Image 1 (cartoon, rainbow, N blue to C red):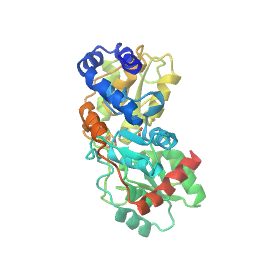
Image 2: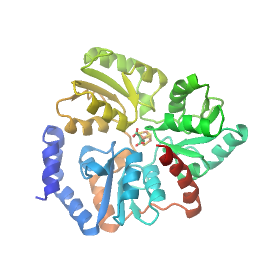
Image 3: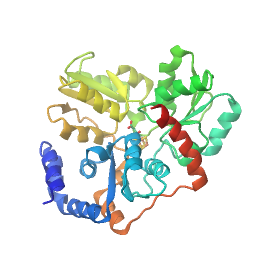
Length: 345
Ligand code: CIZ
Ligand code: SF4
């Protein structure tokens, strides 16, 4: 058994269900790791991947979309296999145009990225001509190409504040997540910023189909059922930016996936945690923090993320499909928006 295969088994041993699955899929994991060495491939894994897929990536190869794009750009490996959804793989390709970027299922989309087109951004620009455009990373390259800045859930607040200051504008356009837009608006109100996001002045809504399902009653039930009082040192509810404003208000902390993971690392007294985000995130953190009980009263999975399976990864590596390509002119303009984000954060 290779050293990494052993390491994966060891990591998953604290989670009996994950360990059993490992035993059932050991051969396929071993073959993927062999191909990775033979072809010199960087395998990147998003926090929302199922545990066995997530474990294919080492410590500096997994995380949120921002970290993964950085790892992609820094790597000298000629091939990148991106275990995540299409907009993430596209961002990695934009930052690493000379590398071959593969995704195991090219139909892995996102309910936030899908409905919006570049013409929608242009329409907002026409209506609010002095406002800079900040576009959430959950969007395709043509939308990023029409934007001044890209942002992720880890840095959205900083980027909006920076854009307002740099453009000397109290109006900032934020695309395409209307719930995250409302949450950011709440946080930037004190600075007198009017954040313009889909749904605020029109009927055009963009929402994450997973995060919008968390309801405040659900969180209150979890608090009672699992003994997670507010302001406790030992237990906490952590919520993602893409959730509804009333869900954010009920949380002990809200942030991106990387910020939630950091919160747990920074609070060693925590014994019980509920994460209001895609459920695989808790499954992945559970093997990293075996002393923490992750409340698994959660069955909200992202149907797009779930398309990335071990079997499809093996096929993709064997045949070097499916390659992610971005039109060069669009990529160049989208890169400017991403670079502006990377410069300030
Ligand atoms: O930026 C990402 O990776 C996404 C989509 C979510 C998060 O909070 O990490
Ligand atoms: Fe998109 Fe939501 Fe799935 Fe993330 S979890 S890829 S935002 S649909």
